[in-house]
Length: 239
Picture 1 (cartoon, rainbow, N blue to C red):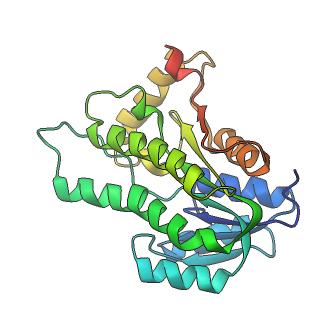
Picture 2 (picture 1 turned 180 degrees about the horizontal axis):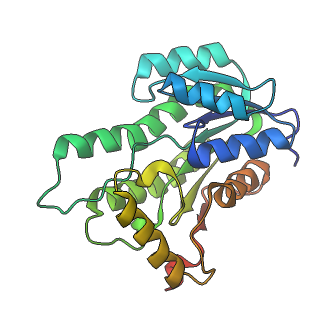
């Protein structure tokens, strides 16, 4: 299946993996609509995307804003959800519950609401692709919130695939990828993490957004995949 002339909505599509998905889909001839809560991010993404791409400022935790967004966008073929704040890595004793709730609001409830409000606008043969992470299967100390989120996203995907059938619903599970999600770590710690991860991975490097974007494109094209979790982690679950 080609993505040419298909319409793809990417919530969280102005940076990192989401922007890489939008760029790759546009390169195949898709019409892309990206959304993010910051105007400067939307403007920056549109400078990188080809003519015809559209951008919207959207807070995915605001249900009325989501409803208005989908009403304005109209019919489309695929919904991709990659929105989220920076990764939350704190010990259980130090965890700020308000921050943890905000983290889950965007990544879990934002995705839930986007699918609930947007699924009715997806044309026959279309799909939803969500985003999780490998912490569900291989948690580390300090990842209680992230691991909880990732497990929830996998379960939500399977439930949605049944409830919304024949609309396909899948989820991508990236490993360590060089994006702004690690921005809360200082530069020394961040680069140290990337080096240590690269040294332990079978592929010998950490991921780049374009590496992971390929999985989203596959799931949009692949008409026989639903309820699937596609792991793109450089072999991290093996070591």
